[in-house]
Image (cartoon, rainbow, N blue to C red):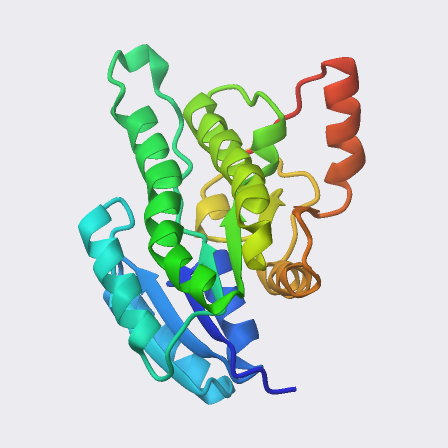
Length: 247
């Protein structure tokens, strides 16, 4: 079924963002694709058009740049048809803290891109969603937001922060008929996880994950954890105080 929805996705040049773009393209969506790697975005755009997207516009964007993020949001709201249906803040990084180096650069990078990048991606669209009394905000968190993974404190902290942002925005925007879905993936096959040398429990194919995420957004899930096997593991870890490894 053709959706003709207007959807903006950050981090859409690869991995989860790319796969979600293809899912919505096959539904006939109008897409705004944002990422730093403009050449990769060209390939993604071409495939989206082949799959049936009504229209696609690419944006070379560093989500940590507030001024540019506001400009891009304004441009996409006016693109093709006025408004916005879904904005998906997917861009993110997962670097180790590198604590022993004495250099906080890696941690700061995690916090900056994963938190400021989310607010920059979403907040500029909120006035439009409020005025049209409709919209869907989607935040990509992680199972790490429920755990304390060794070596990835900055990453985990950033994912806790954006999950909490989602919880508060959901309450704030409910009266405006704006929904907020926070997605907490486990290990999903992507460029980010391909570099991992350790065992990744319940590793899920990117295309499968994208289909499940798109469905979760459609039905209005508040917090969606996948793969499903992580749900009992997280529940047990929180109850017994166990630590489990996550990215």
